[in-house]
Amino acid sequence: MARLLSLLLGAAAVSAINDPQQRPLTHPQASTSLDDVQPFTEALQARIHSKSLWKRAEKLYQLAEKSTEDYGHPTRVIGSKGRLCSFQSRLRGLAA
Image (cartoon, rainbow, N blue to C red; front, side):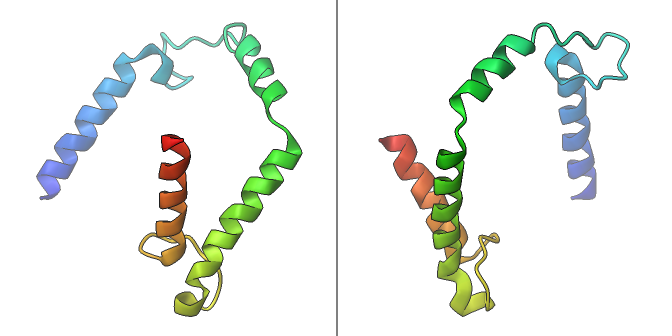
């Protein structure tokens, strides 16, 4: 099992290095220019609004509260009701 995991991690590392956008900044062929990223970043920032972020955070907290009985506090940890509800909420959002 450990050998299989080692092989999988090695394959993932090799594929990541071969993808120019996934190379570490210290890689000799890594692009260090931010000129390509800047227009995308500005467009993305223009679409983000604090009210929307707050509303989504409140919704996630409400979903996390469904785990309070089991864990003694709101959580969305893997295996919890809060996590399951969060996952179902995302699926409904993607289906809409």
